[in-house]
Image (tube, rainbow, N blue to C red; front, side, top):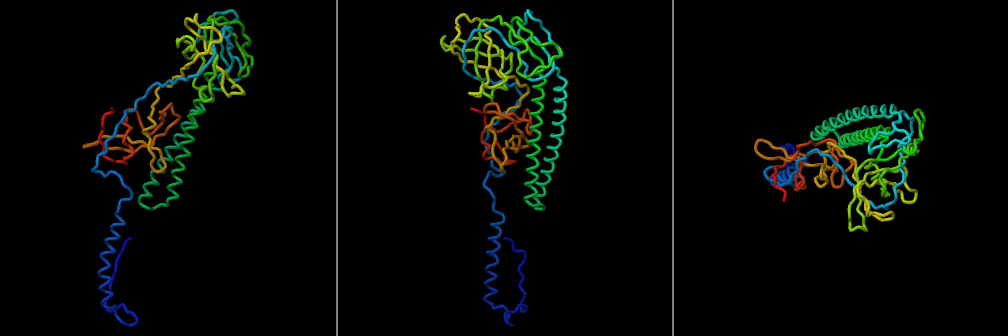
Length: 386
C-alpha cells in the first residue's frame, strides 16, 4: 500500500454545506501515521527468508577437473567352446578395400576390411555445421533472456514476455544438445566403416570382394580363433552403445572360487533377442583357461568406451531455483568468498555424475554441500571435506 498524498483543505471541502467537523479532522490526523507505518511494513518486508549479506554460510566445495571416463557393465554369461568368429558390417555400404585373404593369420586389432566412407564423412561435416548454428542460436536466446530479465526488474515488460524468453532458451538448448548427439552418431557411423579383428586367428572365409554392396548384419569375414574358449553373454539396450568390439573384459568363474580371467570383446550383436530385448555379446578369453569348462556360468565385467576430457558434475551439487536446476560456484573477491549462481548445460549422466557441456569450467569451485541455503552473492566459508 502506498499513500502518495493526503491534502486537507480548510473551509473549502463541505459536507452538505458545512465544514469538516473537528472530530473527523482529529480522527484523520491520528489514523494517518498508523497507515504510513502499516504501508512501510508491507512494502519493505523481505519476500523470502534467507541469509543476509552479513551472514556467512559454511559450504563444502569441489574443484572441477577434466578426466577420462570409462564405465563398466556387469552381466552374466556361459562359457562355450570357441570355433569361429564372424565379422559383420554394422551398416550397409560398398566394400572399398579388403586387407586379408583366406588362410591369412591376423592379430587382434588388425584392420580387415573397409567400406566406402564418403557418405559418413559428409554426414559428420554436416553435423559440425549444425552444432555451430545451434550454438549461435543458443547464445542469442540467452542474451535476449538476460535483457528481458533486466527489463522485468524495472517492471517495463510483462511476465509473459519473460516466460517466452525462458522458453526460447530451453528450445535452443534442446536443439544444441540434439546437434551434439547427431555429431556423435555421425562419428560412430564413420568408425563403423572400418572393420577390425577382435582376436588373433586365421581367416577361414572371406565372403566379399571390392566393389560389392553389403547389408548391415551380413557376415563378411569368418575367423578361426586361436584361443579355445569364449563367453557368451547378453547386454541390455541401454548399455549396448557403451561397448565396442576389441574392448577389455574380465571373467569371474562362479565354480572356481571366484578366479578371474582376462578377456576381450570379440563381437557385439546388431539385433536384440525378440524374447528378452537384450543384445548378444561374445567375449574371447585371452589368458590361461585350463580350469574352465564349456557350460560353466560366469560373471562378465565389460569395460565401456573411453571418453576423454569429460567434465563431470556431482548430481548432489544441483539445487532448484525458480524451476531451474542450478549450481553455486565460489569466487574470491577482495575481502571474502562469495557464492555465484550458475545454470550449467548438462548431458546424459555417468552414474551419480552428470556430463557438463557448458555453464561452468575446469578449475571452478562448485559447492557440493550447504548449497540449499545459498543465494547469488551470499558470503560463504569453505570447510574441508571429512
